[in-house]
Length: 418
Image 1 (cartoon, rainbow, N blue to C red):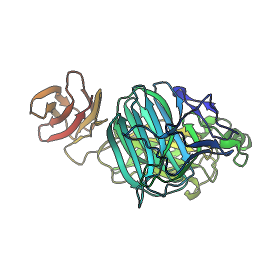
Image 2: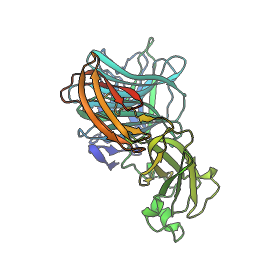
Image 3: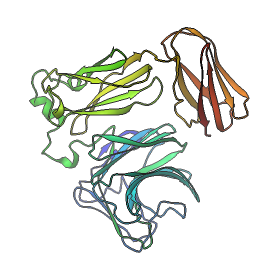
Image 4: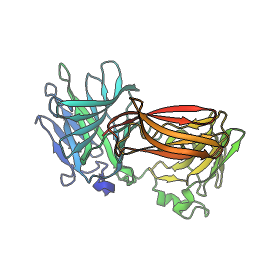
């Protein structure tokens, strides 16, 4: 095990027994068995004994760590299937007040579904409940950034699909894994977890394996151009080809057949998300100093942010510096969606105009009353200007952002949740 951020500790479950100085096993029913098989955490729930992370009392089997109330991102690899209604397994986040969040995949009777919810006693707020491929193994990621939660899954550990992003203010006290088996009849369920990692500090190599050389070993064996970790970090730039952003990058370190690159994108405000996974074995040049090119087709006008991330099989991520590309507007103006939305403290958005002009940026409540005037004056052409809606002095509810130019008008809706 290796220590990581927020007090979290990564664990590849490769020991002879679970480290009870690190993990707490919470078994409200008292019939489960929790063990290690040398490579995985094994949770056995017997038929007829119902374990359920829901509003009738939290009876899920949990294996959790006590953590600080801080930002984190965890990744769990499950190597067991869900095939009987309603077997489930996932990531558990406990709060000091007894509330908890669950991020899981369960079997709905005819398909697997990704599910997330906030449970507070007898009340539940479902965030997502959507069908995904029934795949084994299955990787789950949960990221906390203040009050913003992001849930992703992967079928290969490299390409990630975002399931949902939402706002939920909680004071976190524990993070870990859980398994459940609610149903009628109650099915048996064995959940197998290969590892639980804080992505900021994974265990490399996982399970102490020797088949995949460590990054340090590959550095030592690489050509003389790869002499430090910096050589693995992409050097990226962005330009325009007509109205299409074109990204180019290179790295000094040689590529391996398992190296791949992620192309990440965001508007002027908002979180970077992966829009493309480019594997080295599909690219033409596999040599030191190879230059790679990616065209972001059919992109809207305005400012765009990009980042290139080199990813190695052993889990190391090497992100480039962000680059920006400004795409000329094909319309009179661009009003980006507020982020985050819903919001608890501040929602940000940007306005770009095709020609210089006077612009008003106003905020109204649902009764048509103006509650804020964010701008009343000139804006320059083709340059995004960022604005913020502050929660101070506003009640929870729906608000309308109205942008008035000399020849255009635009609206966006934003929701304040306290």
